[in-house]
Image 1 (tube, rainbow, N blue to C red):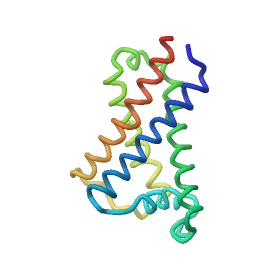
Image 2: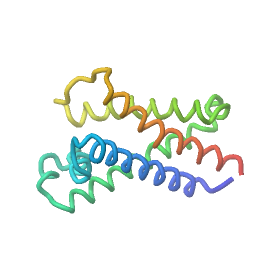
Image 3: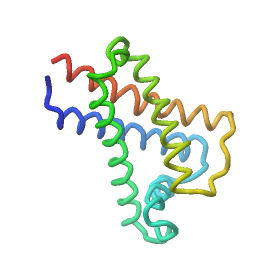
Length: 153
């Protein structure tokens, strides 16, 4: 078995990198809705509020740090529950999909409404589907794969 800290660090950094790259690619490059800088400033605004949008490169960096902190927290949580939830061991694809959906629920229905109380309500539309798919592919599946692999070795 690979060490706990290496597994969590690797899966969290991998998931965080894939997730932020997917968000930038989809929302900046494909849909032209925002910029990479604004995405990271939005993340930083959860802590620094409006100052995040005027704080320059420092706030972009803080947004990236916070993004990786969140990814590492989800990697840690999955690693901790993996040995105790038998269904996670049965099928890596199913467990990755379920965990990606779980991450979406936690972030979009619990964390974001607490941090940003004036968010518009969610509608079942293409942007919602895209955001769920990004979390499944970039967070759920990589964390599930790396964790399962570390427990097998």
